[in-house]
Length: 86
View (cartoon, rainbow, N blue to C red):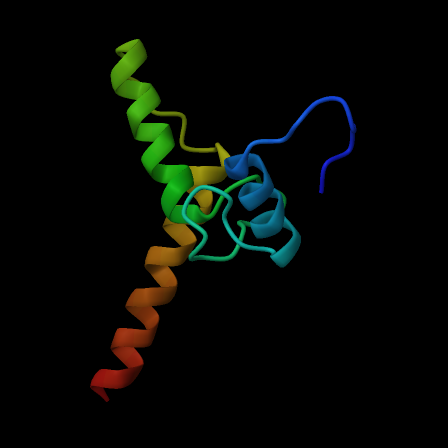
């Protein structure tokens, strides 16, 4: 995994690269990567909200990928629950 023989790569970086190669979230290693993004949906939302608190953001931009994907996931869960109730 080390690309340069003179510069060592940390265990964390090696683990993150391995997770990316498997198609898993490099932050938690549990859920698959969100399509076209660098993290899984759960970690993406968690990081987004953490950043909002840090910069003191009040406004939400609903067309960003994390909001769109989160909404789609919630709708899919609701549809599955509705189908199970029948």
